[in-house]
Image (tube, rainbow, N blue to C red; front, side):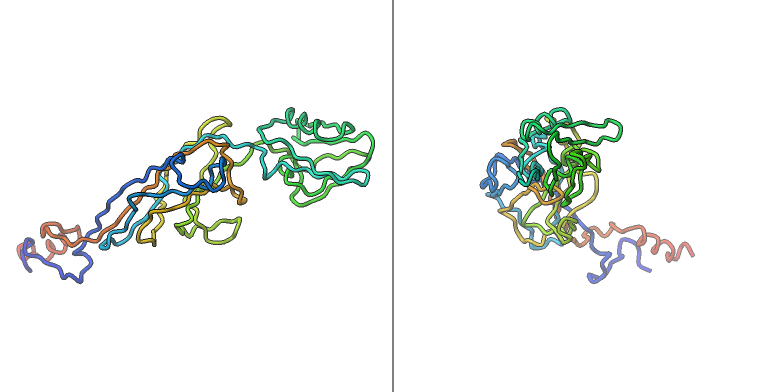
Length: 291
């Protein structure tokens, strides 16, 4: 058995290599975008880097993850995706559009009262959290409407009043969205989105962890990283999209995003004294002075 200082491993032996990592961050402020695809919504923005992110030729892999994300809660509970109410009454069907904004039950019914005919009135059961709609003149039908979840009825379903009264089958919901996803069109993450049931480009899911008019703070808590197949990245698009495929409307407010890149290299050990636990144990057990 050779002395420890003379021990040498074949270049074909994987134990003669170790992994070296380099980490760097790309800090993004949405005000620095080059193309704003959906205007003042600020949820689909293209960025151009003068110094491209490049994978070195000798790198084993390069991965990316969302390290931090900060954003004002400037989007509304009721917006273009959930503000339509369709009602049929006395042979006529009308669609009412509730103004975008943040509501509680009292302000919501006040807004409805300003839109609907004055023959409608509303009441609320604080025990079961359900709304009742009454019309003093006609029976009516609530048709499939985008506001279904807010008011407490099922998706793509119609409901007829009885004796001009209709109580919603489910609770009202003024909580707004619960989370949204950060997408990057140029990076395939192999995360699966239930909305599309297919592989997506979602980098992170951001929970809404604060109240309206406050700030979302997101910080990476897991080891999730996504391998970049791109050799370089100089142009990319960040999209903020909710769980049912709608772009978030930030109402001309902006976000900060930190993307962390990790490059891994396999390097040959140069220091012959640098052996792992199994190297040392193998040597000790076979040393002639110890037998």
